[in-house]
Length: 211
Ligand code: DX5
Ligand code: ZN
Figure (cartoon, rainbow, N blue to C red):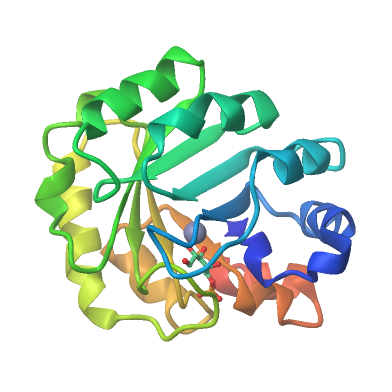
């Protein structure tokens, strides 16, 4: 379970990050947006670095930026544990993943809803995570796109036998999480459904199916 800080109160990000960690979050998902690759701007490495002092769980950093390569080292230094780049963000996906791994971080690829699963077929040897967007990236609080479940299942079949996490991101809540897990997702990212809930732990357990 990887809560997305995008749905937290930005006036007290450190406290919100610590609160989800205390409530049992496995990873903290950090959505970096540049106003170019996606039509929204969020935060960069300085904010990550400050948050790194507040929490110990792995930082799952989702880069919605293009180009990504010039900034990967800065996010690694700021405290990212996983760095996920979009397959659509540049012409050299394999090189980006090699760069992330060369910095000692787990490397991930994200796929927009319009991008086929095949986009990851030839980079699986250099990938630790595949993130299937279940909304169009840029904003929290959007409706889950059910058609993406077929892609999650395709990715599951493709990665079979490899230690690659399959992440779903966008519109995940207690209703959509079981569908995503049935299709093969192993990690759930959720913003609104966690931070919008009164009880963070109950919200996360509900999605895990552990409530
Ligand atoms: C969207 C981000 C998501 C977002 C999910 O571009 O990648 O991580 O925060 O938010 P919810 O869970 O509200 O759809
Ligand atoms: Zn995300």
